[in-house]
Length: 182
Image (cartoon, rainbow, N blue to C red; front, side, top):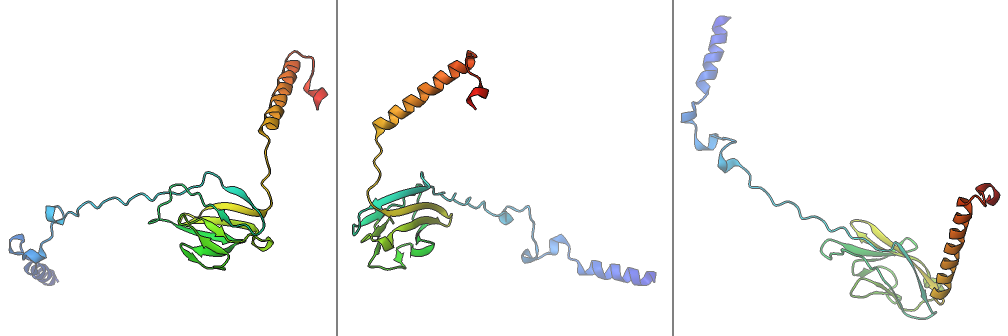
């Protein structure tokens, strides 16, 4: 049995080549400068798009042409695609209009143009920036946009502030208690 072991060891040693007798193709030294991979450029960070407002309401007169804006920030045409939807139905993908081309168009900034606003074209729209799925909701309504009277709003805010100040003073002086208010 010892004879077999010696034969195996002898056969193994005879099949091995000395480092000096190796062909260049057979030799691989991981520490060799030729075998070190060149550092690859780090991937460019993807620009993350966003909207300053998540939702808006657009008012238009009947039969009027209206543009629904998709005011995305950090938009990069080479990295992003704007897709328009109405009531969860896809209207556009990029520059391609999938819905009624007589009713919808895209302007150069990828805003959706509704050619003629009717009761049938009102509703919930949204634009999504892919691949990040960043979304802005737009509600299209027929009618006039409500007018906010800034003067009335300022007077109401001033009156509320005065009331809170007086209430705080009365509470701190012990004239009123929270139990009497509630």
